[in-house]
Structures are given as C-alpha cells and as structure tokens.
Image 1: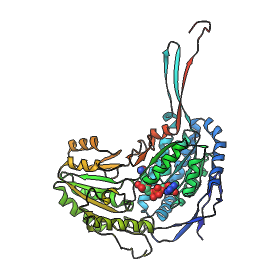
Image 2: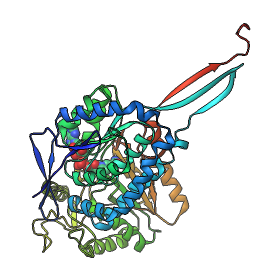
Image 3: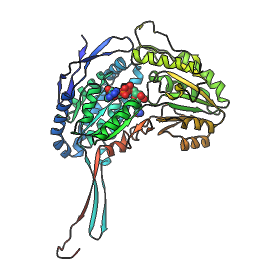
Image 4: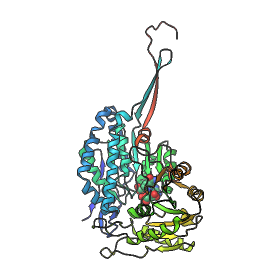
Length: 490
Ligand code: NAD
C-alpha cells in the first residue's frame, strides 16, 4: 500500500488533520508511490507554536554548538546518498546521476553553514566619539519558513535550512506536494542529527498550507522558490503581513554561441543544459542564439545531440533524460511546441507524441528543437520548463546581447566563445544575475548567492552563503560608553 506521509512537528511524526490527500506518482510509470496530506492551518499553527517554544533556548545555544547537528547531518547525508537519490528519481523523474549531483549541492550548503561562528560575526568601531564604542551584532529573527518547488526536492530546502538554523532560527519547510517523499527521507535524517524539538519541522501541503504560513503572525520570514506567478503572489502577501521575503521565480535562459566557440564542446554542454533534468531546471538553456557563421555547424550538431539522447526511467542504465513531472506538464509542453509552430518556427527535432517501450504510462517528452523562433512571439518569452530548445540567430554579438536583454526574466545568460574580450563584454552588459562563460548551467556554488534578477527574483537578499546569513539575521547596533569617572561631563 502507498505510504501515507506524516508531518514532522515538535520532534515527532504526526498525522495531518487534513481531510484531503493527494497521490504522489512516479512520473516514469504513473505508479502511486505515496499519499501526501494537504495540511490545514491548524497543522501550521501547531508547528509555529512548537517553533516559538524552542526558539528562546535555541538562540541562546552558542553558535559552535548549534552547528554540531549540521556536522552530523553531513555525515548522514553522505551515508544515505544512494537511498535519497533513488527516492528523488522515483518521485521527480530525473536520472540517478542528476539526483546524486543535486544532493551533493545540498551537502555543500550544509558544509558552508557549518562556518556560521565566523560568518555570523558582527563588526565594531572603537572611539567613534571620545570614549564611545559602537558594535553591530547579528541576531536571529525567530521562526522562519520555506516553500519549495518540485524540480530540486533534495537541494532547494538546503538553500535555506542550514543557514536558518545555524544562525539560531527555528525553521519550517513546506515541500512541494508533487515530490514530498525526498523531504520525508531528509527529515528522517534531520531527526537523527539531533536538533532539539521544534527547531526543524516540516508541514506537507498545498495552497492553503502556504497561505497559513504567509498569514501566521508568529513567522518572521518566508523563503520561496517556484514559478514567477507564485513568487510574485507570495512576495506581496508575505510582505503585506510584515515578513521578510525572498522569492525566486521562473526563467527563460538564453545562451549565445559565437562562431569562434569550440562547437563540439559547446553542443555537448548545451545539450546537457537544455535537455538535462528534462529541461526542468530554472537554469536550463532555453533559447540558443547563434551569431554569424555559428548557425550552421551548431544547428547540425545540436540536432544530432537531441536525436541521440537516451530517454527513459532514471534508474535504468544508460538513461540520460527522464520524464517530465506530470501528465499536465507533458500536455502543456506539447501545446507550447504547437504554439511555436503556429508562430512560424520550424521543428527540427520533434519530441511530441513519443513513448518509452517499457514505460508506456510515463510522462515523456523527448528532446525538441525549434528553429527560427520569432523573438517577439509567445514561445520566445514563455518558460516552457521541458526539454525544448528554441534557436534564434543574430548577425553580431551586439544584436545577440540586445536579444538577451529584451527578456523580463534574468536568472541566467551564457556565452560560448574563445575570445576574452567578447566574454568580458557579455559579462558586463547582460541583464542576468547568474552568468556562464563556456558553462551551460551557471549554478553558483554554495559559497556564492544564487543571484536571479528581473522577474526571476523578488526581494533583495538571495539564497545561499552570506546572503542567507543576512536574510536570517537582524542587525543590532550598540553604542556604548564606560567612563572611569562618572563625575566628568560628557
Ligand atoms: P510552483 O510555483 O507551482 O510551486 C512552488 C511551491 O509553491 C509549491 O510548494 C506549491 O505548493 C506552492 N504553490 C503553488 N501555487 C501556489 C499558490 N497559488 N498559492 C500558494 N502556494 C502555491 O512551482 P513548481 O512548478 O513546483 O516549480 C517549477 C518552477 O520553479 C519553475 O518556474 C522554475 O523556473 C522555478 N524554479 C526557480 C528556481 C530559481 O532559483 N529561480 C529554482 C528552481 C525552480
């Protein structure tokens, strides 16, 4: 029988008060893996109460002690990597190697947050006036929450959780209801890591659960990752409730290919970026803009790369690309391809209407390439979130940069070239927060903030690294004087 998932509240596993459960499906086979509760506000209320109760002691725990469960967690994550990756592949669809790569990124964030005793330090100035010193210290906010998307269930919660708890906050996760099993397995490890009850908690659910988190007066900050429409909504509702918010949204990432790029390497990297994780990465290459003579050689090689990609169930040997997340997603992607054709694009490789022999029920869309996509059309501006690469062509780098900067999203832009001057110019001029030079997925390591711009991000402090530390702390400035002689006038 399919597992009925539980919430993790106050150091224990609790059934939700939810009347409604959703099935969690393996997108490669449509087999039901689990039932996830759509937790009501009462469950959120219980988690917030437990967090508020835990907070005074947790914030008083020295930073060096607060990170001890994180060290333990790192070991537990390493030891359980295979089991976690299999769960991730089964509910999310990506391949086993994509799943382990994702989990490595999660571990990296745990490692960085273990540096909190240094990262969280304040600063001070002696004698800002005669005999007066000034100190800035960082203190935790209290109870904070994160709402995460389906496409990186092993990594994205870790953009937030390690920093939040290491800085002394109590943290509540609302994972995506489409992939809640990875979070369930992760919380089993968090339980073993030894955090006090109420410091790390998880409440499953959907919209109503999110709204309860956004409106609860006990929660001080909201971190969100998901589509732009939801990011915008969450940012405004959380801010209206007086909370800090950092909301990362969707993307439509352009990649520019210069004629001087090494075409074999470029196409290999570009194919991984466009079709890896079935195109369901917020840093997937979605539009390739060839400059000048790059058009012919690159198009030919990309078509070959798309046709040869092995699609199937992510745990089967040799599979390079899994299914998309759901039947709805498959049909949405296929209709967007049709829309592109209506707008005048030609389909060089058509991934619609295909199936994988051993998995006839799976939600597979094969790699697709659309050529001559009109820059002003809907397909050029809409996030497809599937394995579809649109090709555009420009005469010069200037023209290509103008095409890049026309978009409303700003998650990533990449350039392939062997010319340093082109690279510098591109890096300097593009409106995107994550830039790749001869790199197809410019995902910042945990030591740097994940810097989306434009409609890909609402807020100012991003996830990871020092931005995470700043987001989860408030500064306090103390101005003090300690005279030897109180009778002196000052
Ligand atoms: P989504 O917006 O549908 O859902 C994200 C989360 O929000 C889920 O936990 C969901 O339960 C909740 N949610 C959805 N609709 C809601 C509503 N109306 N009210 C309240 N809560 C709601 O996103 P998704 O489909 O799970 O994820 C894919 C999207 O995430 C893509 O657009 C992708 O680009 C984006 N993404 C962005 C980044 C980034 O760093 N910018 C990273 C990963 C994914």
